[in-house]
Length: 366
Image (cartoon, rainbow, N blue to C red; front, side, top):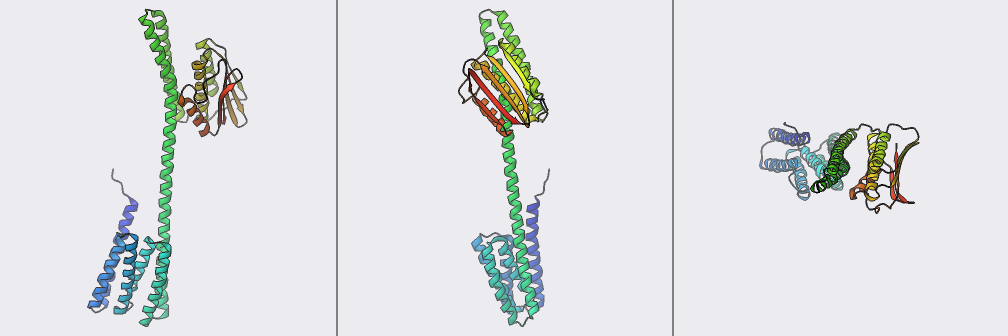
């Protein structure tokens, strides 16, 4: 699909407009003044300076020289052809300075050029009101170009800021997707792989009944993985999660799978949480229980969900062997992802030894 770059199109139009004005001014001056070498030389030099300034093809230092030449040519044309339209070259030169050069340079050039213009016009007995008009037009045009330059610079800055924000948002979304992929695949596929590898080893020993149970368990894990994937997609779309039910199911599943004491309690009145907060709570419970399965299987677990004023808290405590080092939960990315979720949701997470076991304590606004 064809798209139009409006800024590029506007730039082309401005340059073309300047060149059209140059042609009109040149033709008018040739018609109003007798043709002579001095006039032709002034129009050629002034026209070349005008074109170079309009196209803006020179670096700043050479651009300053072109401005000076154009302004000097304007004064020369006033001297050889009278005031007429010759001051327009001076106005164009100063406007080009305001568009490209620094503010101080433009101010100095404008001051010097105005003094020279006043002297040149006065030498031709131009009335004071006319001189004032030419000076006023010069100042107004220069100021307008400076304002336009400032506006364009502000627009470019806003665009850069918008692009930076878009890149930051894209990186944040990539990190969010990475967390979801890790949480779904790490918990589902790793457990599925263990079950299938164990089943294969049992089949080699002709323990088909035990292998069949593990394969059946692998099927359950695969279905759970699909459920987890659908739940993650739903949360990414912004759908709220039934946090108490999900955390309760995770706790019950731990107790059922490991035949271990597992209790789940809720304090306060459960309320609907936004998708990000709900998903963070669910993943924290999932990560904490997975951590217990790996490092202290069979130990008693207490999962507690508290709905407080403006805060929702999740605590998962196991009683048994000490957990892993604080550098990681079930995997290196587990704790990193958990902390990232807590920080993005404006909350805090604490992980570490607690009495005779291990504690994961997550607090989020909600």
